Amino acid sequence: MTAGIIYYLRSGCVWEMLPSDFGPYKTVYGWYARLCDDKIFQKLFHELKQAFFKRKNKKVKRLCTDGSLVQHCRKNELTGHNPRNKNKSTVNKVMTTDENGLPLSHLLTHGTAHDSIFFSSSLHAALENITLEDDWYAHADKGFRSEEHTSELQSHSFISYAVFC
Image 1: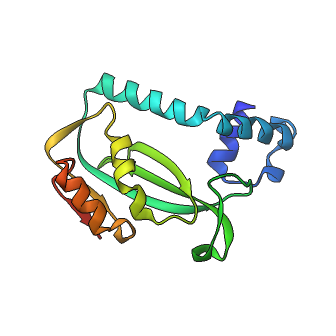
Image 2 (image 1 turned 120 degrees about the vertical axis):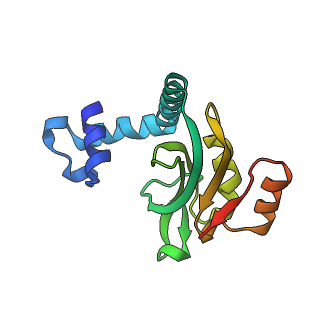
Image 3 (image 1 turned 90 degrees about the vertical axis):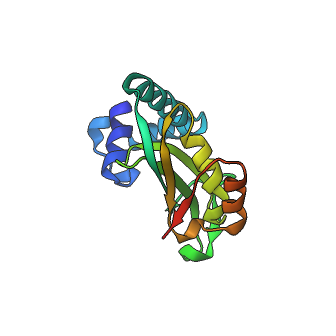
């Protein structure tokens, strides 16, 4: 089952096109859905990130945040018909990485919510168990720009400055 799930995630194929070597696609999908519902992938990501930074004693200079809409076939509390995506059922995936592209946080949010709402929470999640350089900064695209959120971050001395391009 694990190999089938990894194949699906890496290849991007639809479940019906999963090679039969991995077993019936409905069975593999059932395990994948259970792992997602139990938040196993989120827990695994958190543990791997924590172990990596503890072992490497790595400092981060730049945090980069971006989001993307992902079509989602299963209805749950995060999916919604998004007018920005032809009213398809979507989930918003927000990720923060370091300057080398190493993922530091991964949030799944409601597909109809605006990106700027999640900038602060994505940065907070990214900063767990990592050390920052003294002159660190955060970078995000214009979709995350919000005067309210930027001033909130600066007022709490959470961030020296944020660049929105």
